[in-house]
Amino acid sequence: MHLPATPETCYWGYLDAAQPAAITVDPGTELVIEAITHHAGDAPDLLMDDGIRAIWDAIDPATRAPGVHIMTGPIHVNGAKPGDTLRVEILEMKPRLDHGSNCAANWGLFHQQFGKERITIYELVDPVGGEFPAAARPIFGFDFTTLTLYDQPGVITPPDPAAREPFSRPVTVPVRPHLGVMGVAPAGSERLSSIPPGVFGGNVDNWRFGPGNTIHYPVFHEGAGFYVGDPHFAQGDGEICGTAIEASLDVRLRLSLADDVAADAPLLRTPTQWFTHGFGDDLNTAMAMAAEGMLKLLVDRGGFTMDEAYSLASVAIDLGVTQVVDGTVGCHAAVSHELLAH
Image (cartoon, rainbow, N blue to C red; front, side, top):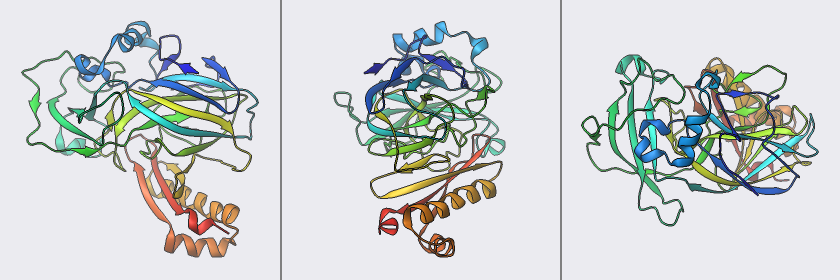
């Protein structure tokens, strides 16, 4: 099954349980979803094609609120009901175009020190047949001056060769394709901004949400209301300047209902580790939530007592900062499969 990104299947800037489903699928369905970056206007000559321009042209700017991300979906999963766990297996990702954008934005960690916003454009190294190469390289940058601040969803910066400054020397970064935004319809009936993450997922910005890994989400509404957005070529833990390498992707995934996993927040499984996630107004709150989720995982899946889990978490669990730039801070905690085996 294929879910293209069109003005009819995309919505911009919000998460809302009342958003009509773009398609309905049965559990176990494998599908390809087109995910579009909201940064395509940073270099429209490199990051836009006709399909992306159609989304820009058709979606009313007044409805691109209160957040910034372009979502494809939602997808109604037959049989999903509140209290269930939605399993999302990421099978494959392919670049839609060969370039992406990074914005050192006003919400970045050191905006006050730099005193400006700046765009850096990256390209994939030797892309072959739509498959991902191992690396990307920065090719040029320019100071953002189109608006006072880079906060307007869908801003387009006309190409200006004179303003594009070549990167000072050749360098590459590892490509880690993933979805920055992915999740289920939040609990309640309030329309939420797409920017802060939460127990429903959304803008978690964990670079591990990519091919070969599986994410579990708690379901709050009939059908789950699954969506994707904010695709990335690469990102580091922290995402400190404000964004990743923002670039459009085609994502092949499988949706199912998990009867062997109970999730009350995004729960990630990789071939070697489990990851719990925490969110909060500050790092301490987010870290505590991730750590408490890990203690629960050690008890529920590892069979340990809480006292044993607390000790193991201190000596064998890795806590990390997922991102510090989305208003709500994110942290994650990781445990090896070997520790849970019994």
